[in-house]
Image (cartoon, helix red, strand yellow):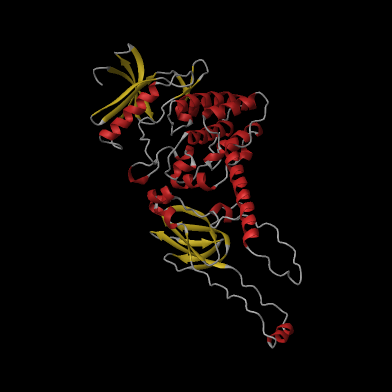
Length: 459
């Protein structure tokens, strides 16, 4: 590397390490040289994967994508040389406040078109943010610093199970440690557009883990964005990847529609056909089953009193999701697989169901018992549904629930009515730590907090 590149100036830090202005003796031109110690992924397989991704990235040629020249690894150093683009990042431009909606649409369309070219080459950026979007001297947006150095493995986690990327811009599937595809970049671009239009990202909490949980559980605050952008942001920031735009090309078309005064498509057409097919298949299966039983079962004697035929029963999933069971406006319990590997709170914050008593089967009343039952028509009062909260705090904390002090940890189980509750943990060395929990009947919600890692120390 030293034989090819002459370092001329230090430019700063980027997504994969230090960035330098260097002279490339092979290209006879100045380039941006990004250098990182390859500590996160070593070995022949990591180097082979890195070179393959560099080879793919070199094939991307688009006016809105910064050209990648070459890349390689020598010993403990990994490097990438890219086109040197003079200008400013969108992060710098945002220092002057939110941008006009027309400017947001223009820059967003160019970003989506650049992403479309990247996606067509089989590459996922994985770290799209305002710091990686440059506006050159002509006003053209350039997509930079796509995550070549990050391994595109079966899961987007690094050493120790931590998700790779910037928490404020990561998609829900990245937060869970699942593979990222083009729809994940679409989500990150939705975050960028929201930030350009409002001056802030849609999700930011006191800690990175809390920020990731917001991506998983909290609806995006679309009401804060300009009305013209809301239909596009609603799809781009959908929690379910199947409800987002399929790639940069689809999102670019939606942004062009808004700029031209047309209405973008409200939901993906590709997800409606499979669902309709499933409905039709179930309907056919139901008709077939009805015909089978009608011909196979011999007719019995007619009933003495004809009862009205019940209507079709609604289809229900055997196990409701947390989103379906949580009250409106209350985040569901934190059940985050990858965050559980990175942080014990995600695994221990889930409620532990306890078995509920099975009600006895009804038995027909005897003639002697019938008059007694008629003599006591008043029903017994229905007991209030109740669960419990168990708080485990390290090193310790004073616990308040719904504004009522409950004592200092360690505490036993705190009985609470079923429903949402506000929990506040306080410690003299840390800032107050609030949590919102949902108690379910017959269940104990275990809340585990390590203030040394989850909390924020007082200055």
